[in-house]
Amino acid sequence: MGDSPKILLKTRRFNVVEAAQSLDNGSLAERQWVEHPGAVVILPLLVGNSVCLIENFRIAVNQTLIELPAGTLEPNEPPAATAERELLEETGYRAGRIEKIHEFFMSPGILNERMHLYVATELTPGAAQREPGEQIQNLVVAWDEAMAMAMSGQIQDAKTLAALMLYDRMLHVRKDESGAYATVASALRSPGERR
Image (cartoon, rainbow, N blue to C red; front, side, top):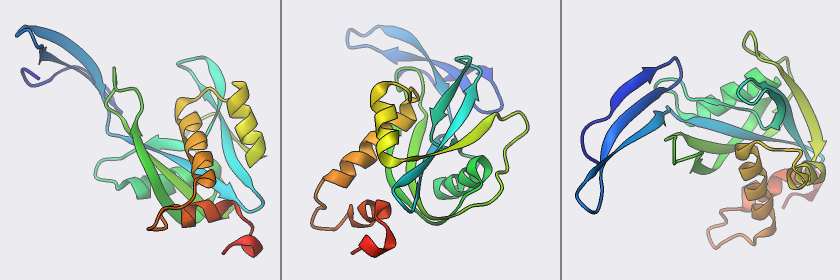
């Protein structure tokens, strides 16, 4: 990278920045991207092999999308705290247990947002605390139905697709020597089935 990034646009949640990138031939190319504080996506698992999705109107695409609850990190807020806060705000559920299972970049060609994926279990229902203007409704479906919605194209949100597919794969992969998948994979089993 060449010079330090300069801010082209500053908003409440992100900045658009520009910097010169040094190329292999010695020349410079101007690059622009969205600078983002990072975010979380939460996979809320209910007893009985169900998952709590949300229906969320997104003005950028002028559609109501089926998603997992998610939200942006506040300054100095640990991702786990963001996950707990966003789960409560968007769905009304409180998690007795929340476990980070992955993190990934959302769209690194134009955006530096790092998404932290959490699985929330031992859920207690309550009233959602949605922000004014949020058009969100809970959509609780069986796990197999959620996967069918992902495969059919009914779910189009990238973070939701990534989270569902990754977790589904984890359920079918034998745990490694450290037992890394043991607690995650047990979350979909009813209490009587847990080992």
